Length: 349
Image 1: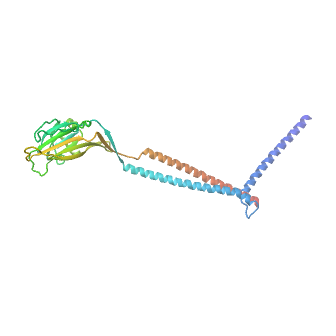
Image 2: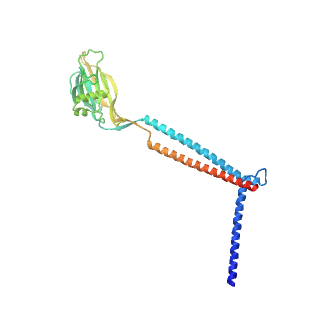
Image 3: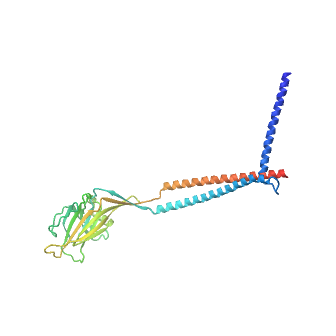
């Protein structure tokens, strides 16, 4: 009998618990329905409009804020697209217009240049190497003296006409720029049938290359085609200070040219019988120990371009992702609002 009474009481307790859970579930469902109804504005000034309009105004503000954010991100996307276009245009312009870069390399010794003279009827009287800018006075000007320079004589066809032969006297130039080495030359021209007397000369980069060249005539033809020529006049002392410029081309080749500063001083002929002959004096010296290197550099760096594009495209993807989520959220809010409104209207009717 006791077991039957216990089982009966246990069943009654279970029924009471089940009733309590059903009552709590129904209470929660009623609360949710009241919230759904409360989020809708009742028409025609029904009771409770002031309390129901508050959540609707919040959802409206959220929608407006989402729309504003969407427009902001669309504006940012437009700016990013413009930056991509402008960056690509700047990159192409920099590729078309490289920047000239100039660098200087200091040396203590130059490769001895070659000095090619075209004296014509003039005669070389003397040639000496001096140091520290000290040139002693001439003892017997106009008379043959010592020739201490390394010289070569060569005849070759004119590279521009190929019909006339040219006579050139090649002299080794100065090397030691620290000791201010210079080369002093004296020429003499006995007769001239011209109003102006001058001697042409040509500078090329390496005298040693000329000596080691198997075809010296072709070597001089190439030099005359590549380098500029200058003149120095009779009756003056011409001082030539040279500087070397190396230019690196786009194909990797290197060209060498000389720049020079020339100063001319009048020579006062103090010979007892000057006569009608002309004297030429010329000095060659290095201006400074700096070799100037010129090359074109493209300032457009492809890695900077790639990094910028990656950052811009990442911002575009993030903005598109946010815009997509914002649109989905707005659609979800709208559907929920319409659902609640339909439920409220059904309850009212």
